[in-house]
Amino acid sequence: MQSLSTQNHRLQAWHIAGIYVWNNGKSEMKNQFGMAGAFGMMLLTLILGSISIVSAEIENSEPTLKQVIEQPDEEKTATENDQKTTAPTKPRGPADKLNRGVPRTAVAGFFSAVENQDFATAAEYLDLRNLPGGYGKEDGPKLAQQLKVVLDRTLWVEMESLSTEPAGHKDDDLPSVQDYLGRIPLEGGQIDILLQRVPRGDNVYIWKFSSSTVRHIPRLYNEHGFGEWGEKLYLSLPDYRFLTLQTWQWVILLALLMIAYMVTFIPTACVGWLLRRKNKGHTQVWSRFITGPLRWLIVAVIVYHWIDLIHPSVETRALLRAHTIITIVGAWVTISVIEIFKDSFANKLRRNDRAHAVVLLKPAATAVKILIVIAALLMWLDNIGYQVSTLIAGLGLGGIAVALAAQKSIENLIGAAVLYLATPVRVGDSCRFDDKVGTVEEIGLRSTRVRTLDRTVITIPNADFAAKPLENFADREKFRFNPALHLHYGTKPEQLKQIMAEIEKFLNEHEKVDKEPNVARFMGFGTYSLDINVFAFILTTDYQEYLGIAEELNLRILEIVNAAGAELTNPASALFNTEAAS
Image (cartoon, rainbow, N blue to C red; front, top):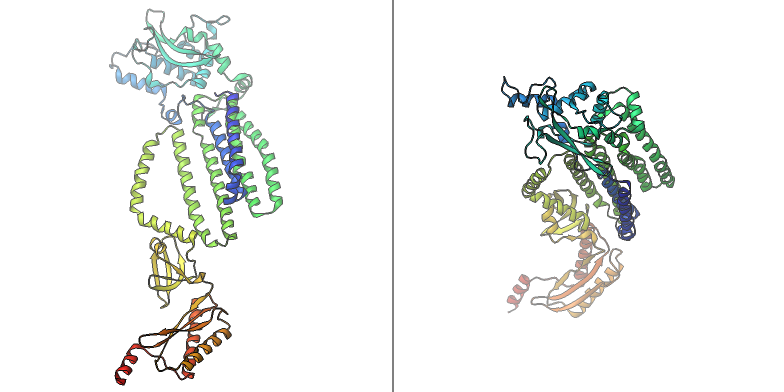
């Protein structure tokens, strides 16, 4: 287990990282997401630090949950393998009623006896010839029980790796009468757990736990046993086992959970109450977050940090290393933070008069949440022992294939993001694109719907629509009114002056026409006409209203021309009159 000082150093490092994120990223995050963004980034940093500490609680050299689940029953496996590798009439190794002829069956028999609480039989698998001072052969059952506790807590035995040969392994650099089972830490050093081939008493050699191993059992139990309180609870409570935990361990675990919740409840409840008193939308959201997922994350971290109080076995630590609860609560916390950021960003968009872009936040947040769930699932599979690299590689290839197949859909989705964020047009705006004029009715995730002046509907893929030059009539402050008048060459100068003066007067008096510039100018002599240019601005942003006002102005100009006794001309009529005069 990792030392407390190392854990404190790790926590301090992550704390410093969180403060650095707060101090150096506060101004930038405040500009983008407000103060909630800076606090959220610091919070995520500290969450990652907490999970890192929990992950370091259990050494990586121990078995994974997958190995524990897939480990077959020792006695059954040993018997089946012995039957497969032994002739029907001649068992492998010497005949022995306790099946101690080869290392694998000897270890399997020991585990079977202690699991059945038959410690007297389990003692028959120990070499009791060289016991420490104060111990006799009558203490064999007690030593067998203590050895089982030590092995459960410290050593993962892979039965498949044990020899099925009467002489044991020959290539393990050990004496021919010994086989290696594992190594257990003891008082700053390590003790090798050995099996030894010993005489049974009738000149037949069998396998037992070596005398050197048995001699160290009391010291190993003092360091790796249940402890004073654990042993008292173990002896006083019924010996039931559920999910690799015994009754007394469940009692301590539930007590630890209650204490962690009470310790966490008070500060989170106080902070939540203070936030609720402000009675603002974002403070209410943060209050629910702190008293909900964040509270349970802290409880889970505390429980995992002090889990050694229950003296977990190797199987229990493999179950804990899966980090199932931490993964679920961590994903819950992260998704909650993303939801808070989404609401904060949506409020900012509304304040900046960009509420139309809020529709993009929901699918974007949903996509991020799905990625978080997938990442959490992959992390959990990796924690329990599955190799996820192959799966990730498969997902990568599959992602490339999906991306190629959905290339147009992705382009349209990006086009939708451009239309919502850059806002060249909005829903309800009149615009011109290509040679079409219409009103935008809907900007979806795939396409945009535009209703034309002919009252038909054009559906355009977002990628194509965003790439077009878009003339947005709704963003105009006013419309330009700029007709050109082509008068007959027979028009007199006095008539030209009268027409221009009347037009300027009419434009200045019209309530929908801007006061400036409102000019009508004689532009010169055209090929077939005398040209007057009218220039003004109509005060409206609605295209349909502009058309109505422009029609009114054109009719009034025509009346002014007719009242002055002049005529409009065109190239065809001018050419006809010229030919007739000649």
